Length: 398
Ligand code: 3PG
Ligand code: MG
Image (cartoon, rainbow, N blue to C red; front, top):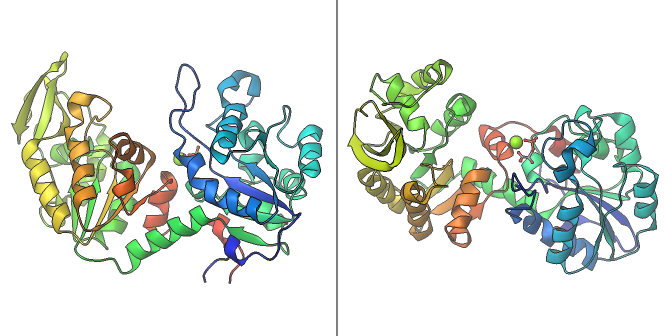
């Protein structure tokens, strides 16, 4: 059943709208500064539309994975996120100090006027958030007349109170999706439902074991799965091919072994790799097949990039998750940049999912030329796998 979105909302003039966003943005490890604000920008159309309709907006999100005492997780306070949110929105965003749902937060929320915005403190500073706690949910739910879920990146978290127990508590009040979640679901549903063929998937990243279910779900849908990144060497090792100095856990090799029957038919492995000397990353060499001791793979090789680019050019749909090399290092970024360029130039429907992949595409300046860049990491993988989300079950149907 289709879900209601903010376009289906009755008049919200003067109402307090509680919106769950995913402002879990990457932070600089040393300074704590926001390194990428894509997730904040992605929620702006929904927030703006609510303000245009005359609502007061109470936004809430988690940030990182705080371990308990907020004093020890100083970088995970929401103040800088609120400041950036305000800058991007072009109006101030209130942020009060103190508990997530303490007296100050409650008073500020209840005093909000039409057109005003506030952001609650990091939801995970309260341990009850991740326990789907009913008391915590009641306290938050009491702040709003309307609930909006625009937090696609967190939709797969079935135990987060702000995603599940809060809207459950608000049954009877309008509970709708924001534009971002609606678009994410529409694009991925289209991708997995009746995609334009042939469908190519490009998969990179390190761990096969984390992605076995995702890969299996994809194999049922795609015509070709092109492998890159560190998982290349896991597959090679599973086939008995030498991978030089690359260390790969046994469980990873076992996971890859289960997929070997598809290698050579649906799954394509790189034909060559850019490798670097383990003791001198500046010394690089391209190898086809076996990788000698002393070296490890750091990117797909030029022949592989040519083959993959050609397949991407001829595709009807391309779905990409996981960088194909160690792209943070410019010398090892050719493959990842090349895949992004090939997708941008292809007439295919192109969808990018996963935080790192989205960041790479953005860093290389190709994001605007993709059909869709998902804000989801784990949520993207889980939704493609076909998992049903408890958070979405709480949203009203049309
Ligand atoms: C994410 O980035 O995956 C979401 O914001 C959810 O965060 P989590 O992985 O810490 O639950
Ligand atoms: Mg996650």
